[in-house]
Image (cartoon, rainbow, N blue to C red; front, top):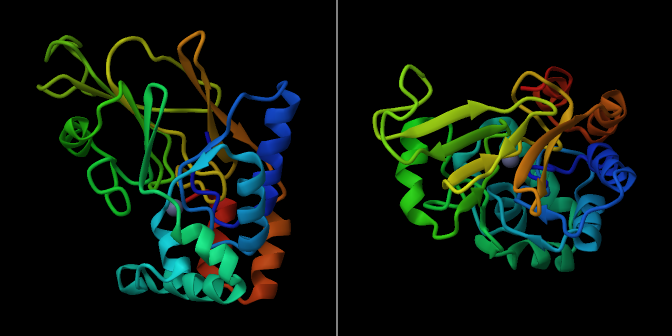
Length: 252
Ligand code: ZN
């Protein structure tokens, strides 16, 4: 699945090519924020429409569609959102405005930020993860929004991972996900963030995305290098804020 493409066509094309070279996948799910920050909103919407079997709304999609004002955004994000809105035609904004806030697919609930507050909440800690387990009914929930690959699992018995500082006393376990790391989904409920395709924020600038093997019951985190200077040049030509251009090279 793909999250937080953020109008980065070069990263998205690299990921689609990688999936193809792995022999293709049955379905590609998009977890929102197709646009915002990056220089290629129209091309990214078109590829998502073409390749993704489903897509949910992110806060930047709503901002570009005019469904949300940008007062909650920082200055650079707001400037990029306004620039994005000016690039899109009415059918593109209509597509973004029509994206659902959450979806269920097989054993998975899809929500951009969190199942509790799909457009806004970040799940970055055990506390936020624990609060969100009651808000979805499938075994697993896939999220984006933070652009940080993370895994949270409800352990059966609180304290069952005794000695692990990553499990809290109500039995929620947290793990950061690195390139190539594979999780056995198992029977226990989990919340998974595959990181961001177009603007990773875990200090690894490579595009981040996830692969689910439903037969084997596994989730694998993948990272892929792409031509970052090429994207940065298009952002500069578009007059997008310098801070957004620089951060791509650092992955934050
Ligand atoms: Zn995002």
